[in-house]
Every structure is written in C-alpha cells, then in structure tokens.
Amino acid sequence: MNSLFFGPNGSGKGTQGAIVKKKYGLAHIESGAIFRDNIKGGTELGKKAKEYIDKGDLVPDDITIPMILDRLKQDDCKNGWLLDGFPRNKNQAIKLDEALKKESMALDIVVEILLDKEIAKNRIMGRRLCENDNNHPNNIFIDAIKPNGDKCRVCEGELSSRADDQDEYAIGKRHSIYYNDTEGTLAAAYYFKELAQKDSSIKYITIDGEPDLDTVKNELISKL
Image 1: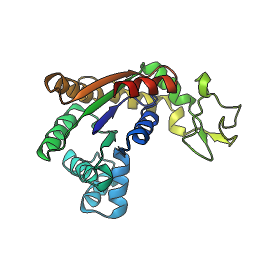
Image 2 (image 1 turned 90 degrees about the vertical axis):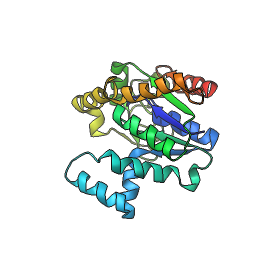
Image 3 (image 1 turned 30 degrees about the vertical axis):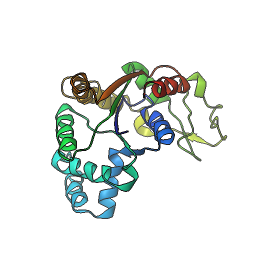
Image 4 (image 1 turned 60 degrees about the vertical axis):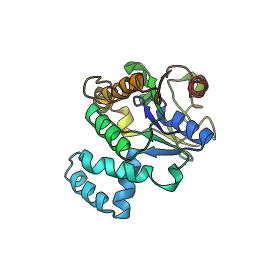
C-alpha cells in the first residue's frame, strides 16, 4: 500500500501516520528526513540541496523529487510507503505524479485529515514535549491528553514547548501555505482527489481530525 498523507500542522497527521505505519508495516517517509539524510550522507543530490538551503532558498523540485524517488526505492519500502510532508503545492503534485508514473510506482491511497484552522492553531500552541519521549501525547488544550500540571501525563517527565509552537505569526504563515486551495498544499491534495475521481485504482479518503486520537484512528483504519 503506497500512500500520501495530507493534513495541517496540529491535525495529528504524524501521530496517525505512525499508527498506520505500525499496523500495515509501511515505511513512514517524511520529506524533512530525506533532506537531512542526503545532506548528512554527502550524496550528490544532498550536496546540491545544501547549496540552496545554506542560501536560505527553496530546494528546486528537480532535486527534491529525485531524492524522494530514491528513498521510495529502498528495501524498507517494498511492502509499501507512506509519504508525509510532500508535495506542498500543486506544481509539486503534478511533478510527483509524473515521476511516479515514469517509474511505474503505483499510488494507492491519498489521506486528507480535515481540521478547522483555528482549532489547528490552538492544538499547536497547546503542545508540550516530554523530556523522555516527544511522542508522549501532552496538550493543554485537549482534555483527553492534558498533562498533569507541568508533568508528562504518561511518565511524569518534565515538559517544555517549542518556541515556534508559540509564535502565532509563524503558525499562520505555515497554515496560509497549507490551506491555500489554489496553489498551496490543499491544491496538491485536490489534484490527487481529481485523479482519484478518474482513476479507480487510487482511493482518496477524508478523515475528521477534530475528535480524540482513538476516534480519528478508528475512522482512518476503517476507511483504509
């Protein structure tokens, strides 16, 4: 099962992706990790990407997409993959679709997690990170995973918050890219939605991201 995951920051996309990875034995591919691995490994694509990153420029698609394809061809992806964090705009969606078809790599499922922008913002600002495990769910604005004061609800470890999670301007900037349905990330999702309407081999599913984690998980698993 090869899949793309879309959802705004704060929607629980990473958490749900980890659940799907474990249940179906998929490789969970995050676009940011691909850049880091190529740069750290000194690959030719990594060296080219670093030149742009060091200048504060976006890495061109003709470098990014080959890195992603190389990653999807690795052994751990043979049973399927879940790509998270790419594409981020419609043009990237078109180029990724073309590249996958050229390599005869099937795309089976596209998941879009739906969440109101204001709720997503509050969830981001409410996130707290456990010193022992960042994956321990703690959020001061979600009753089901509210921490014990300033201690982790799972292990009683000390909690902290990321600086960028408290920056409303930065959150708004990220969300303005995601929720843009003409050129941004939602436009990329909708590109694949239109493909799925024409091609029955692609399944496009939407999930309500507002309920608690288990409810979202159960809906997602039931639709996969």
